[in-house]
Structures are given as structure tokens and as C-alpha cells.
Length: 445
Image 1: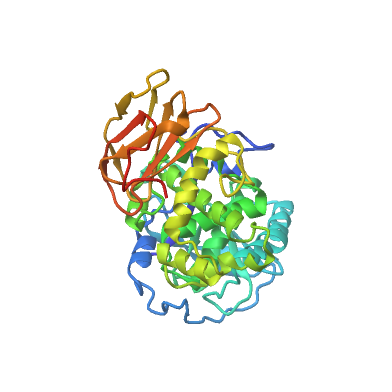
Image 2 (image 1 turned 135 degrees about the horizontal axis):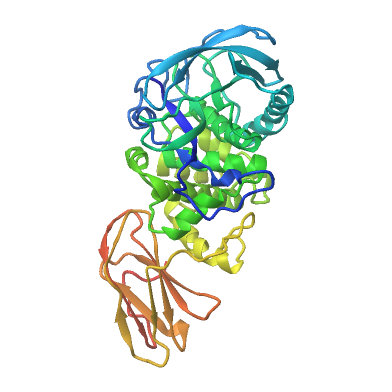
């Protein structure tokens, strides 16, 4: 068995609304799968199947040879239709500064494509990813990464996801190599974006193989953005349609998610990572923060604890919870063109998140309204819009004393953002247009 992180392309139209880029689909519209159970077992059980991996990311070293065009080598691959492993022979077609590019036997790939992909990795992907997330320590002693172009087996029949696998990273020791697998039939833009995404996984795994999926996938989405300006549009839109999708999820929950819910998880993680980059990291304008994500990747504490530790390392007083509160508000206000910290600088969210409720209290001073009960998951948010003569006079309370904050949108409506933070439960929000806030423990802050 192998541990893999996968990029798949939807073949049945599960994700919609993405705008095609010139010459093909927007890389941000790809459908990602990171729910392979083997990977999650590694994340959630330190040590797991990798007896030679330690918490600090140390690995047993395997010596490899130097390969030149014409050399033939075998690779262990994954059949995603059956879940089984199989072996292919492949020929080295190019040796770059940072990579070997192999092609499965009996596959025809144009020399121009070989050259472009090699140069893209050497001059765009490798320097950008290592400059942001740190150097990969590697499972072998070869300074180059292996890139294998092959016909990835992803169906028909047994592949219940109905997805076409564009590429994956193999984090196991089956090949004893740092290797990324790309589908030879994918478009060039798909390959390039996948290469950036999977190489970040390789770097992250080489330092911290137990990192939580939601953190690792956010970094890989950001890797696409850095290398190819991919805004992950389909995923972000899925999250916008489902803002109740929790940011922090167990690896198992991520693995079980499907369709638009799965995409919403990717969208949330990407936006969270971009928000950190713009406010605390390499895009904050502070050259001293360029190592923020490298420090996060090197931090062996995972999930929330790793983010708290990295913020502290860089001298920030904010905790994960503090940043989360700002982030859920920014996800609403960016649709109004707000800049950091109340929005994003690098992307524009063209729509407000789907609201959980809307009420118009205009002309009803003293009017009170209770929205239907909503079941909120930890580290999720719900947005309620309230029309009123004076939005500043809108008071609000909820039955769970969950955290809340009020903002005013461009339409002059009061918007109440509600989040259970680390709790969960069924909550009823009550609003009123009055002279003072009705809430106590649930007051903004």
C-alpha cells in the first residue's frame, strides 16, 4: 500500500461556476481528493506505517544513482480503481537542475512538453516552493525530485469517485524516492499546477509527515497561487456557498467528504492560508516574515497548535482563535472590496457567503426576530443579515453564548457573524432594533 495525496479532475460536473482560463480550464477549477485513508492513518497515528520516520521529520536515507536521458527505471504506482499497487518501467527523458523527468514505457510525450515541464519545475516550481515552504529533506540522497509521466489508472468501474486523477504524491517508502506522479494525458496547465501542489506536499511531508490535512492542503492550494496565480476559484465558490463548512476538521472527516463539501474544505483551507500570508507571512510586506510558512512546515506541532506556535515564533500576540475571528469577518467583507485585515489583497470574492438568514426590520423599531435553529460545527461560521433603520442599533443574542460580531454591509444592513469557535451545537439567533445590545456573554470581541 502507498500513502498518497491526489489531484483529480471532475468528469461528471460536480463542481460548477468556474471560468475557463485561456487555452483550457482554470487550474483552480480542478477537483482535489486528499481523502486516501492511508494518508490519514499516517497523520493521525504518529509513527504509523513509516517506521523510519520520526516526529522531527527524520528519515532513513536511500542512495540513488544519477540518471541521464535513456536510462530505464521501475516505479511502484497506485491503481485508483482497485486500490492495488503495480509496477511500471519508465525511461528518463530529461535531467534538470532539480528533477528527473521519466515517461512510462510505450507512452508518447512530445519533446517540447518534456522540456517545458522540466524548465517549469526548475525555474518556477522548485525555487518558489522551497523559497516559501523550505527545502525538501528527501527520502533519498538524490538532490533531484523524480517526476513520472504515466497513464494513471483511475477507472473505469471500481473508481466510485468518477474522477480522473491528474497527479499524486507518494509519501511512502515503497519507491524509496522523492517522486511525483502526473497523468501524461493531462493538459500542460493542469500538469504545471498539479506539480506545484504536489511538490508542496512533498516538502511538507519531508519535514512533518503528521501534519493535519486541512493545514497541508491549504499550503498546497497557496503553492498553486504563488506559482501560477491560481485563485482556486471553484473551491472558493464552493466554500462561499457553504460557509458553515468547518475550517478545522479531522483527517478522517476530510477523507469522507465528497462533491461540493470536499471542495468547500479545500476552499476554506486555501483562503485561510492566503489570509495568513497577507497578514502575517510572506505577502504581509514585512521581509522578516518571509520564513513564516517555512517555520510552519518545520514546526512538528500540528493543526491549531502548530499555527499558534508559528505566530508566537514571529512575535505575533494573536492566537489561532484571534485570527479565526478576523478571518470569518474578512470572508464576508472582501465582497465589498475590503483590503487586509478585513479582506484579501490578492483575490476578490465576488459574492457574499451564503447567509443563514435574512430579516427586514425597517420601520419596526422594537421589532424582535428569532431565526430558525442552526447546528454549527466547531470552527465554522454563519452569517445573518438584518435590515433596519439604524443598523448600529441592531441588538443580538444567541442561545449558546457563541461568539458573535456585527458589521454593516454596503446595503446598510447589519450583518451578524456567529461562530461556536471550538464548540458546536444548535443555536438560535435573536435580533432586535433597539437602543442597546441585548447580548451579554455573546458580545463582540
